Length: 198
Image (cartoon, rainbow, N blue to C red; front, side, top):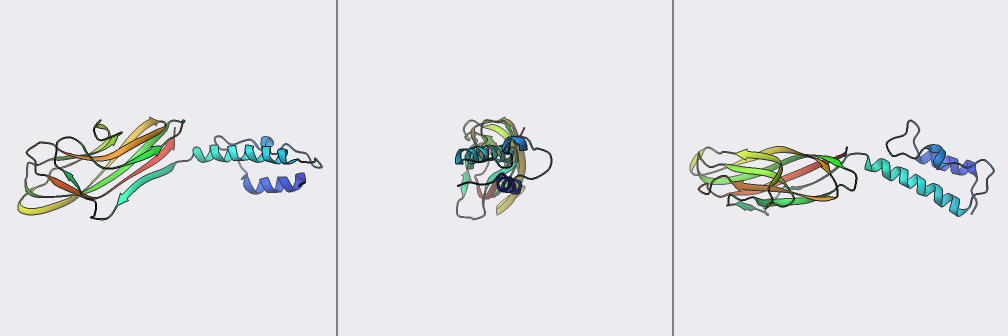
């Protein structure tokens, strides 16, 4: 199949926006270096579109993206019954080879009963697994005294991690501060990560 330079230029112009180059964008003269009247082979076209694909991929990677989870049901409770971090739920962020910064927003809905006013609970965003407790964000709950009653609270907190590369797991975690604190249960929860190249 033969396509004229004018047709090819029109096709590429419809794909590549006008204006200044974005980070990683292939310069226009590198995308279309043909002259009017040139005979193009399939190799010429494939080479042009490969350069275009690379430019689009580089630009897409330079834009922020979002990852996360949200559990709005009561069907997946997690008991917080120890002073060591317990994983509530986790996710993997695929950052690639270029370092990125990650901003987190997290929340948990926690419920407990027979709380005496001295019970305290920690919640965090652990980088890696819950067992290594490398915190990038944290929250806290100290409920009031409620003899023979239940109370619940939504705890919201944020986090931040910088210079992240590769595939990294982040876990929403919880723990009692003291062994004497009453056990509590986490029901609904969510964690979102906004990932942006440095």
